[in-house]
Length: 516
Image (cartoon, rainbow, N blue to C red):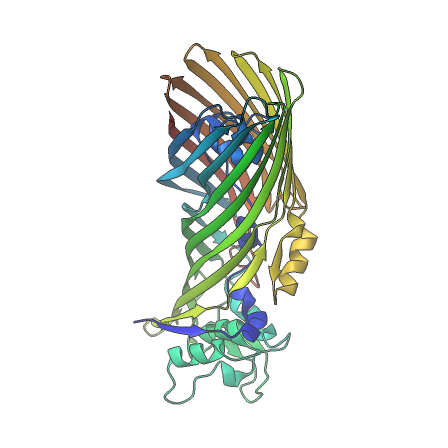
């Protein structure tokens, strides 16, 4: 049975590095192109069109475009392939998931004929904003760096920039690994940093040792040989979702101006299991040195949030429509739970291999913290060719440097401000109708949120689909493709080498819509 420890609020400042890194904060600030099949097929370019349940996520005024009450749901199959290149070695992994991607309804209430406010619409819609199901596997031979630098980094700087004292990484007589790991997690100013130093220390993981055993504040050095190459594997398997439930209200003025408001409830649950493996080919000596390392981390992040949206759509002429929408920050309350396990094999030229297993069987349960994502502004234009065709363009701006974590995350907030930038997103969609049949296509381009353009690259996506109307019932099918490159370190501190990842997402969506 696993034991749970609870870190006090004061401890969060010293231990925030346990889970939240810049990439994790960014994960909750980005949206995938999810929603109804029609929405996906047209690249999500619905800010000036409305009349689609998922269009409410772009511009809440879109519900006032509906003529009749509507109920709809969407099933989606997502297939993600991640191709990795790590020091010239290529690997790949893929993941497929099937889920209820969208479900919602809109009710339309027509006012009296003599009223300028011709219509009121009320809607509720659920969208899986971000599907976290994913697998990434990287492998290759690193000629320079070992994971020992991860443990050394915490050991030599974990005490406010100074080495963690030996008394905190060395077990006392009769003290178990679980007891020491729990004690460090609950005590300032060491916390998570001391836990990392402890599990890698000589008496436990045999990866690092003190340079001077008689000096309680000694620095640490590695027991991993430095005269070989390091074969390394990094596997990350994640599951979960980021869902949004929108409560919508909209109205129309003379069927020329449409105004709308969304109140959004967010809920998220992410579990990420990572395993790092390393072995080296350094010549063996009479003294035992590290030959293999396996380091497992399991992180569970869950919580809730709130945001709001306001928007307007104007019919400039019968053909031309323009839209403007504002989406507020999402204010999340998040919780992290982290467990770790380390297995180290040491070898010598004479004698059998020795395996040290450091398994605290402790789950670090951290204090609830707040994450504020950046707001977004979307401008839209659409041209409608009667009842036969239309083309629509959306352009959105979001400043990722405005991501904030509160409180005790000053260092991470500083990194966010210096590394992230304003990002633009272009969406283009078109539809052509042949009687009851509709043909659709879309394009999507999203700029990188990083100033360097390398850590996470630009996203490019294409989509296509078709729909058929049976009168009061409609069925829509869509295929979408998106590609994005990234290059992120396996760990956030000490050992920051990472693979180049080419991620391709293929998605097929099917929607059923019913007019009530």
